[in-house]
Length: 147
Image (tube, rainbow, N blue to C red):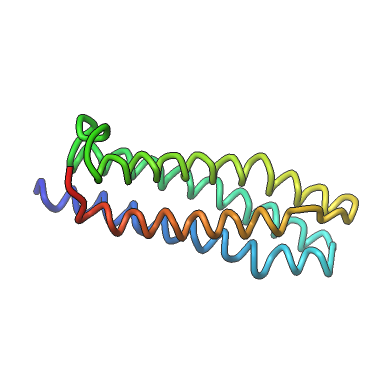
């Protein structure tokens, strides 16, 4: 039962992490370019909805990540060894992703909807997408890292 529960937590963390990556991908490559071309109300609602989804799924990714730390190597191993460095770096990236989504993307998309000013919104989506790719790469290494 113990192993199954740990696997379920890891599965949930990976699943919602992939959804977080997919949300940033969708924003960067599909929703924001569509919004730049067509500022109809339905496109605006879609853009804000995807941004909210990205923030929500990011929170779940972080929640399952904290549970995964507890279920595997523990919080005591965070401040030593390769594993701890990888996990702390990933936590910093996750916090940055939350800030990008809530402080840059969503207000930027609202500004784009309201005024047509797209200044930097697509760039922030690409930065978010790139950071999620880096975080996933780090997490794949964390499984094998020494403590």
